[in-house]
Image (cartoon, rainbow, N blue to C red; front, side, top):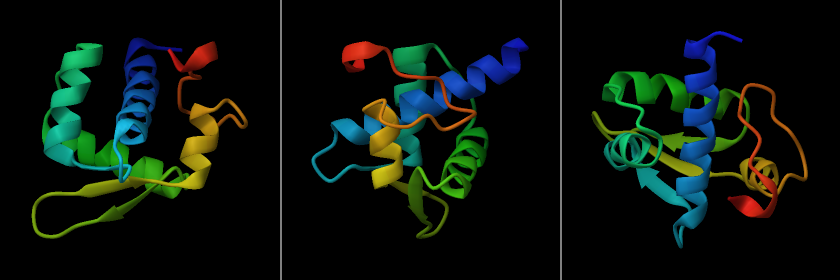
Length: 100
C-alpha cells in the first residue's frame, strides 16, 4: 500500500472515531478537518475531506447532509459496527482493540 492510500484509510478511521465521540454522532466538515490535523497530523483542504466523506457515504459508514458549502456527516450503524470491530469495511483502517 502506498502512503497516500494509508493516509486515506487512517483519515477515514479518524473521521468515524470523531463522529462516534459526539452525543448525536454528527460533525460538520470544518470540525472534521480540524480533527484530522489535531489527531492524525493530516493537513488537507476541506474539499479533500468532502471527498473522503463522499466515499464513506458510498460505503454506508456515514450519511451526509449538505446545507450550503458545509457537509454534515452522521455515523451510521454500519460505521459504528466498524468502530466496534464487529465488521471490517475495506478501505478504512481497523481500529485497535479497545477502541484506541
